[in-house]
Length: 107
Length: 190
Image (cartoon, rainbow over all chains, first blue to last red):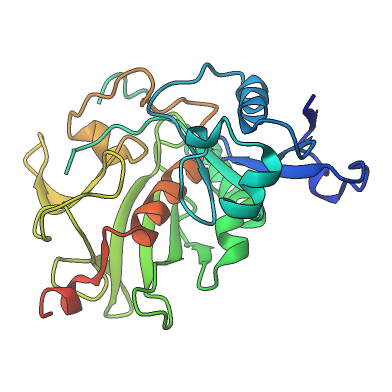
């Protein structure tokens, strides 16, 4: 099961058990330090995503953007991947950003 | 703009200062990219932010300057405008200037896929009060509301929860994506 730790001081928390992968998620609407999650290498990405929404106290919406910061790719499309495979091929540093839908003029 | 209740200017200024400092302390965008800076002006409701853009050729990033007006913050988002220096002060940047970015899909720029979400940069927009001004059209900029655009519930600014991060991160996403074509002065010549 993915473990979630609080935001304050989470970046400096050294208590992640060996072998687990750390995901940092920045809520770019509300700001502040990241939420930090850790999961086993065989954990599904979808499990972490579910934990993210729980922590944000939001229901997933189709136009939310949960993205890998380094690549800009949507995280949710990789929900079926194991965290180890996702981290090795799709989003190496596991830093994600979250924003809700945006209204505006369509191009 | 619906329900434009007056905002206590001292509260608005304090929130703007505090939230901007938090953004610059916490945002991974600031941590990962050089060129970011901000200052609060003599008017504590006005901030100037320098923001780096994508570097299409791998060289030094283009740096844009934004004026944030927090007069209605955080009941409403900041009012955000691309600006350029002029006679020791600032003025609104115009299409064709190096201070005005070219974003594919925005008026005056080449057509095509936009920034990946609803967002457009207008050089000269006629507001309902008859004023012509620049409009960065997205629901985390005050101008979106004063120009009578209507977001759905999922897009609407959440007073007391959303912060200036929501505004700056989306503009930065626009300036670092494939829709960014460079400063409009160069891109329009190319």
